[in-house]
Image (cartoon, rainbow, N blue to C red; front, side):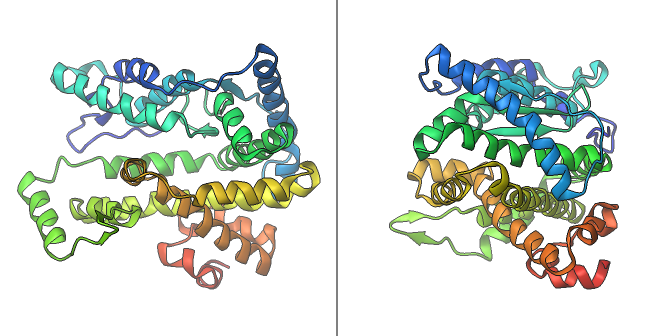
Length: 358
């Protein structure tokens, strides 16, 4: 696996005290929903079984990974997920090198650790599951059972069905990465460019930011300045070099493809294995669209949560159209290498991808 090091050889991951991030994140995580021991045990057991049971139908629908061992999922609570996420981010960003760590002031590393821990704590209450291709074991599926319980209660859906439905999506991510190991390296390579600012001096970054702010007006709705996901991404681009902008586009497009493909597979497999799939899909989509309080909207925008929501919609529309026109077998050409991944403009115009690649 590639790690994100700057041109000078410095590892970005060493700028963060990851142990502190995991500790702080665990302490700041929201209280988990109250459950009986029976409900907790049942949820853990059903999620583990659903993760195993999802693998075969997902492989059949996607045509990815024929045969092979079905790995076990790890069922975790919020602090467990935060610790796993911190470890993954450390590995993904090249953290842990003793030589580079000495070049980062201890106070700066701790401040970064505190900030990272706070972000992980906020995110931890919304994660249902996640496939981590950067874990020490070479890839691991995590399912956060307190969040699954919280959402199924909120949506008032059949728990067993909802747990299987969640697993269909997350197991699709596991299949994507296990069938195409190069995807993890592609992500790491793009992230390395994105975090490499060693060749960029501060005046240039400030100048680009000033140009961005000067050329745009602040949008105000209902007496509040609006900061949507597009605005945050625009602000991020304003302080990036051209290679960094290209790397960001690569990550956004890949994320859109992976999420859209998982959504497509979830709906394709769902009716056969989830009896109440129509009700779950309808209520879950309504939940995604519901209006958030102002502070939460701001945090979601800053953390890219809303951008991720749009990835589900855009990505699914792309996969639905391509598979509908050429079938899943020809669609799978998309997993060949970096050249066959969609370009940013092709996400909105799937026919352009078909014309270019197929």
